[in-house]
Image (cartoon, rainbow, N blue to C red; front, side):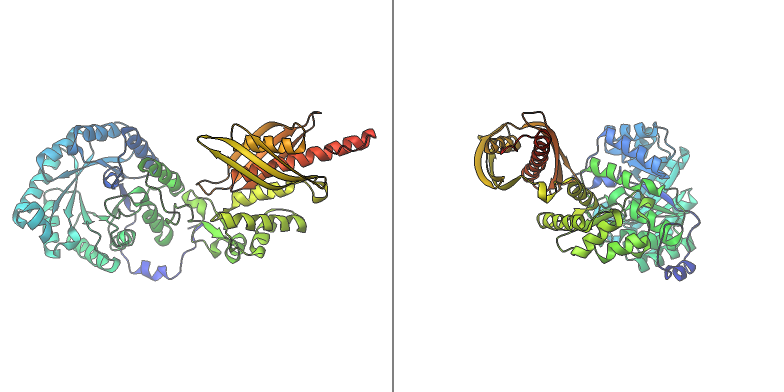
Length: 525
């Protein structure tokens, strides 16, 4: 597959596996995903997520557990009436009222479950195997009598004796069940064991097999893939791996691995994975760790140095697939431990700068990195802009030596500055409506002239509380001369001060040139 650079050692594994031609994707973000502690989607959020899942290419959307409440039932019905291409599924116990709630919700498929492990039968259901099987068969008959698809799960299947599993699945199959789902309810399986289990079930059953894996040991995706390798043709997944306890198999990881590693087809449009992940992240308020595979912010981020050199020369040096394939972008990250050569090499790859300008960029990046955990490519771009736009050393007429800014909810913002102007030390203070305004007033007072701040623009470069910012200012002196200043930093006040200094030095350079042209003596201000 173009854009994929995985290991050749996977080929013999594929040869001895029983992959289906196509894997169908049932997404349960709106049901199992919403059971994540602290997650509660609004109706509008559920509709938006369902639309995104449909656009992504999910085959089945498990939209909820309709019997839970009238609100839940109406939500599932509303999603069904969106007329999406994906089938809409409702979850139900093997109980008539649960199935009726699904029917009322107008679903295409009812996913029924009943516990089959010893511990669940004895302590949760308090019934024997025969009674559980009887309920399962009655429920299956009821669903099929209403003309709906029936997906059947043996809850806690992976802790159920294999003979019992085969008996339950065979029995519901004979009563018309369309699909057998195998839940690893408490995430206790590992890939080899899962491959063995699904292989035995596939040999005994006629209808398709589905996987539903939990991530208690961090193996949900691996177990899902193992099940598919053994012949399972449907997978239950959630966006961002949401779900009870440690969550479910991640949609992003599972489908990308199927496509990239094994060449197995699904209906998923991989390039929409990142955007779908972002929508669910915002709605769930569960923020992904930056190193989350496939869709995490660091999934395609590279530290400057040998890795960056390799990636820039040939992407597959340090990437198993191209970021664009999954809707991501490559990011270059630099930290305080990044070597000077690493920063310099990165800058040379992207920009045509003089040796002096490269050295200035390197020093600024390293200085900024001390105060910031990481410097990303956009940060470096801003630093380059700053260096390219900075006033040459020989044209600096005013330097800021020290500043002190005090502000608070009951304190008038006050700033004091010490600066050097034409070799003279000057000290002054000022107050303002905010810390930057106070700083501007203090600088004007020290210079002894009015400098108007025509424009002030502040932007965060990346995101988060440790983001670098760019400050762009436009100032004007009493004679109407204007100049722009740009500065980058992790501290808004210091970046503002440096931007003001840049613009002031430009104004003084213009003033000197104007005086030279007019023959007047240079102003000492």
